[in-house]
Image (tube, rainbow, N blue to C red; front, side, top):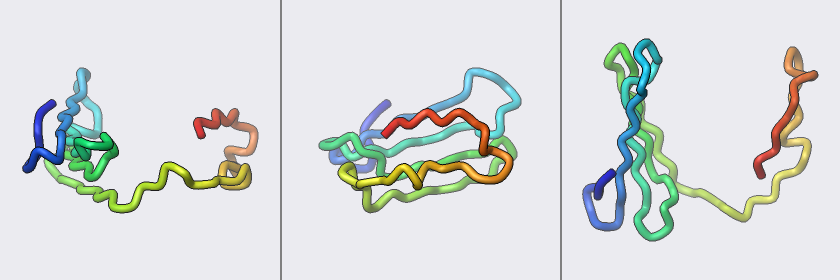
Length: 83
């Protein structure tokens, strides 16, 4: 845990505690003021890297129950709605 490129950011470095997982390291960059994620840098076990940038996060989004319906082979699965 530490500061990012500026004081407006905080950085979390996540590393697995078991071997053999597909991710070697995940770096999460958070906005210091809101602690909302801004960026994920994922380093895979084979050394490849993926970056996900989060630009527009809405905490007031209205989601209908239909947004959480499963189809196909997952129809009987139990849904845990964390909205």
